[in-house]
Length: 382
Image 1 (cartoon, helix red, strand yellow):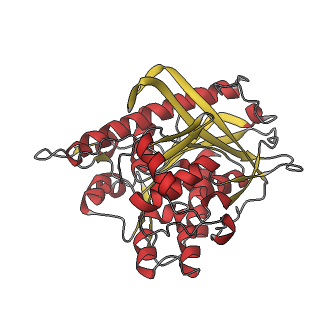
Image 2: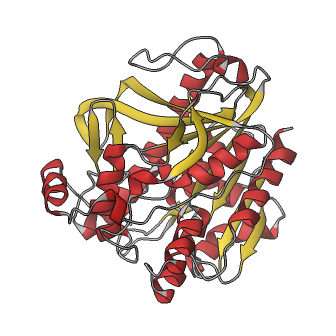
């Protein structure tokens, strides 16, 4: 779902959002990772001097990414929050109102949710496969924290990306940048095309920056000190990618275009520029027609598919070039942190049964989805 919100509008929302004391609000818990390793995490501020920002051409393209990795020592380290403070405030004011109104408004302390990853902990020296994550349309990278740290606990390095201007909020060192998409519904097909193409370009750029990191350079534009041994943990010879919704389509498209990516998981996406402009046929991605020799997994939910999505994937699935895992009694956002979060909020009486079912479904698939993705990448990248 895409909306537009300016910085001024966001400021007004923040100013008028009901302010309850943090102690009066509900605190969520992310399920712990299932692998044997402790997890470290760090955020990187990346800037592409060669590229204009497509949503704000006055700026060069800047991104925030999080890196999750097996940690060698977590003693004395602070556990990372799911949201940075500014992102949490924006999320409560915007996402719960405009993107997912099934969520409770003003009743959850979004900034209090902790991950199970330790800020800037030293990395293990062992070279690890690296996996990139791109979230759903208008969604922040933070809502993919659970799968990312679970993969890291199983021995992968994971990079989660925010796509500035399209994500609902991105907190940079100098503040939060809100979503900047055009509000006119007639522009939606063009917005989708631009978003997909921008995400593919972002992915290629972040791959370049991680190659610099693996070579011993610091890609952070501010020169932020990196966790010890992080460069030694990155194996750019084994690269995977996964994405949800719009991000799933971008992940498959990026894999088709960039030979550095070896394997892909799409969590319920089209393989086309969907929807098509009025009166025009839908433009299918070449990979959906030509096929692929690289491992490809599609995850689907009972409530999240439609005929266009089934058509997009029909050739790859029928030919055996892609494998599918389907989840009954599930909805589209079950593949994100909303899966376990919505179930907790429902048990606490803060989400209705109908709202929970519409957002994530009625069955908690957190462990099953994590295991499916981890097993796929373990087989494909090792």
